[in-house]
Length: 173
Image 1 (cartoon, rainbow, N blue to C red):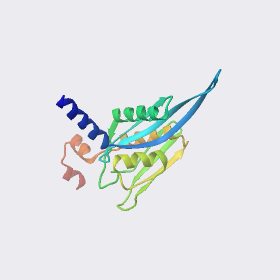
Image 2: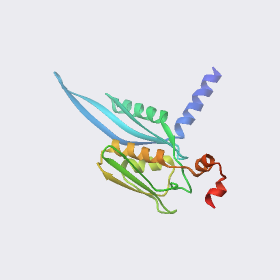
Image 3: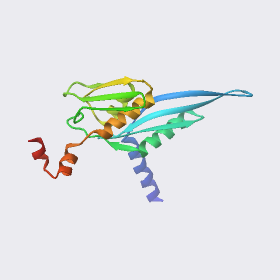
Image 4: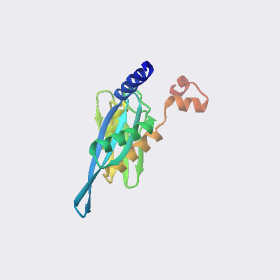
């Protein structure tokens, strides 16, 4: 019995260390014989502000249930963001369908110059200074997918050095 309580306490601690941001909440109506039946979809971003971030999409007949489902899915597909001095290591651009996202590193003190889904991802991932531009379609789901494509395209200096068989010091010069 003691172990179960300890496990629950540990589970609550894990949940609190994540930052959860609701990007979009959508209500859809299905017309039935008795009137309208509403259902909800939620798009959320979850991060630990230490370089891990994920997104999730959940649907349910209740708002809180849709949000809970999307947060659960976001925690399952977390990816690592290479953070260097509070910004990204290099400029990167990616697109998903008609949405294109451009991310540029910024000097300390610039802040997060981004809107909507890109801002949510950067805040949750622990990036404090970045410049961004969303080009093309402004569909929030597609912009979010393009942002995650950007993150996956980013190269971390330690990984590049390891792949080339060199020391990090040799890479920087």
